[in-house]
Image 1 (cartoon, helix red, strand yellow):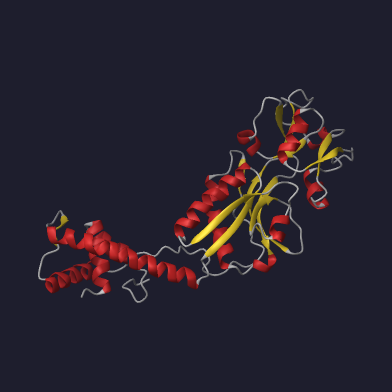
Image 2 (cartoon, rainbow, N blue to C red):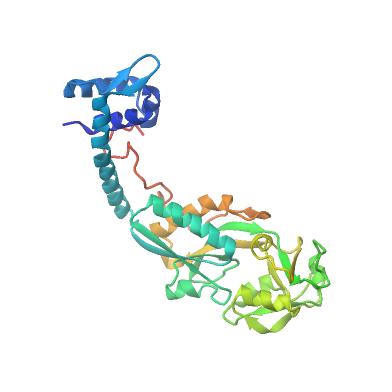
Length: 338
């Protein structure tokens, strides 16, 4: 019967075909690799590798042994991984919601990475709209949101800011500001913003749709509230109001009847992660948050700055970000010196 260390070293060397790389990968010394392989070959009474000064290769018996051992070994790794994930609470399902196309792309990428690392876990992605705000967290249809900030609710925790982008204004194609590239906040005097549904808190609406310019000039609100961003864009295209957004507008929301104008002196638009405060210690949620912050920088729209260095609202659960896929040296009591 081969020992676990012998199996690990044999399979790793069979893949690397190099004693130095095998030793580095398993965090042991090259002589330990050589000694263990020789011990295995003596026990079996047959050579598993041919060695020269330039080349290491499997013998016919070595290839057969690798083919027989590898699926069994992978099965053991999967079983150990499932047990480890269950011990960490990494089983079940998490529902995550997104607002906007960019947030959807980020969560979709995080979903793929997270499920690959945690095969017994399922992530369900749902869309959230302006009128929802954090309602989906409260009614349980979502456990985590990647949404436009600010969120200031006593029962909600706000984690890291994921993206931060300069503010743009959506105006009709024939609007007086269309085609100007960039204007100042003060240039919005006398304009009319769309209005949001009553379910949207005043602090959120006032941040995105300020009622006054820095110089004290009024900005109006449209009489009919919008429940979704698509509804807001329809009102903008008709020339009845304007609505803000960030740089993802240029990539995902182009249409011939709307123009986008940069407002660089307005506060930037941030998207962040929000969850129920009662779930602050949920390892599954925090592990998914870590994956979102990992994948987001590569997916931020041009002109939108990845801002995943923000500070979490609560302490990160120790170990939540660790990869859960076991390696060749992941067996308890194995040969790794880590």
